[in-house]
Length: 173
Image (cartoon, rainbow, N blue to C red; front, top):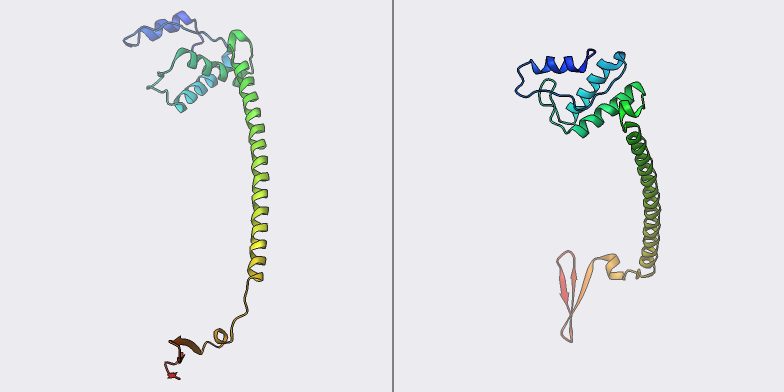
């Protein structure tokens, strides 16, 4: 960022003891009142993306870096001149269209899921009702012996009948 000439800024950077020389790849000209804000936001976004390499240096491709700067200039200044922000406006419109499509698709899928869940709930209720009816129909009345629970009858052989009470006493006939 500079408010002076680009050539002067490059001379200043090349005199800082950095091992490689600087040169301008892309130049963005914006009103001076936005310079600091744009620079801060560019640094913040590039750091957030994990591209920070110390002080004012970032490991990032020229195209990605240019797009980041263009997007921020558009966000802050509202400037949509292709000379200033390149294709940032088109990228934003495409991102908005993609987001809108994703929202519609999410709603469509949620509707289908809700319908399927409703069908499943109804089938479950029908099944439970039918199971309850089947259980009621198949109930057999309890026998006298199972109701009283006091005597168990066991047949042994042809002639012996033994009665056992649940108190442990028995009799054989």
